[in-house]
Amino acid sequence: MPLMSFSATLTTAPIAAAERTAILADPGFGRFFTDHMATGEWSSEQGWHDLRVRPLEPFAMHPGAGVLHYGQEIFEGLKAYRHADGSIHLFRPDRNAARFARSAKRLAMPELPPELFLAGVEALVRADAEWVPPHGDEASLYLRPIQFASETFLGVRPSARATFCVVGSPSGAYFPGGVTGIKLWVTTKYTRAAEGGTGDIKCGGNYAGSLLAQTEAREQGCDQVMYTSGPAENRVLEEAGTMNLMLVTADGQLLTPGLGTILEGVTRASVLEIAAEHGLTAVEREIPLSELLDGLRSGHVTEVFASGTAAVITPITGLAGDGFDFVVGAGVPGPKATALREHLLGIQTGDLPDTRGWVRRVC
Ligand code: COI
Image (cartoon, rainbow, N blue to C red; front, side):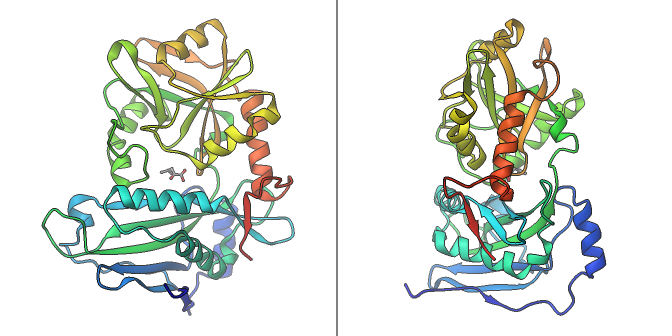
């Protein structure tokens, strides 16, 4: 295949510098978008083509487009950080590229070659470099690649057309109280995934199905939902609404549910890799809910936290469900979660050495 790249047509009407500076000072999460988007098209006749960075604008979509009917849609989330010298870096984008292709395959969509995924993300970051927040805290430019079925056709079969797009959204903490700790609601009413399903890929449908569970969690006074799977008498931990789960034990283990029906998080993988540097032995296995609850009662589980691109590392300081309501540890972020978070953010922001080759310079 000839080398393809993204052409760039820059906007003549960017958001004013003063407005952009005000947004970057307090971006929140997912509220604001940059001036451009990267897009590409796929058709069964032409393959991937029309790769462009262009001014951000709404899609014109036929009401018969496949994504609107059968939910053929996948996405990714990754971040660009500004280092102290002003340069801009992505964190392990190759992992997102590979997962994007896996997600596409599972939804019977064309797999975007990882080099095109990276080219699209990087071309957008270059066009919107001024939208990457200043170095200094955890603020970053969150990048959201998506791919969806764009053929106009109502038959139930894989779409013969797909659209790829990357948008950028400056972001601060995902949870307003993220660093101070959040409370999870363990739902027994809803599940997020089943074996052979789509729990291990990143598709919009997984999150659509999670919204009612998230509403239930809110009604219970919690910040987010925690899923379990398996029969009522032997429930095992899955993941939280938008994050993977991790437990720290008094004997120095870092426990996390094994892969299968959960998302293979980039942050999850990174935390497991640096665990030993924090005196923790990383263990991936099935974790019964009863083991977590017993561990919280006895003090064997000293910390619980969640990991994700948007959430980085978010301490879980409370856990409630049918018939239980625990304060985790001392009810404040634990030392291991705090140290792991600082370590990861240090690598991402360039304040700590990147000994594993995880950060990729864009410009
Ligand atoms: C992420 O952490 O990047 C996610 O995609 C989770 C969520 C915001 C949907």
